[in-house]
Amino acid sequence: MHLTIVPDVVRNQSIVDLPASATALQAAQFMVDRDTAAVVILDSSRRLIGIVTERDLTRRVLAQGRDPATTPLEAIMTRNPDTLSPQDSALDALELMNVRRYRHLPVVDDGKVVGMVSIRDLYATVKAKLEEDIREAEAFAFGDR
Image (cartoon, rainbow, N blue to C red; front, side, top):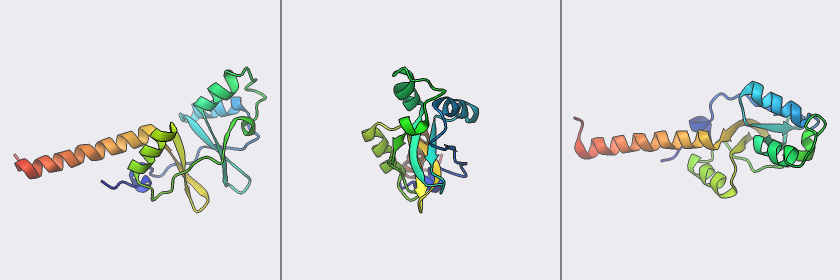
């Protein structure tokens, strides 16, 4: 099984990003409005400089008693996050996310963010491929009935 991040997991995604100067409250509202659990932080050249997730908002803002309305993302973002390339395999990405306990990773191609992969995206893609492989193996072994 060789599934790649693009196009097998990520297809035609719009990038959900904010500037580092945005607040934690703005990020939370932005995530709710776009039904996403993570945003990438881009500089003025649209280069990735960080990521903020729901977990970051909980642990680095709420749990520490910071004011979400005044806490800038640059204070809580994970700087220079690990990334995936479009050609990376889905299984390698799944392993990296499992080992490092990530739930989201940006996909970067030639320095530009082209997507975001979640652990759920990877699980669904790999599961579907495994089920397809099992069906094909059964058809081969037992013949079409």
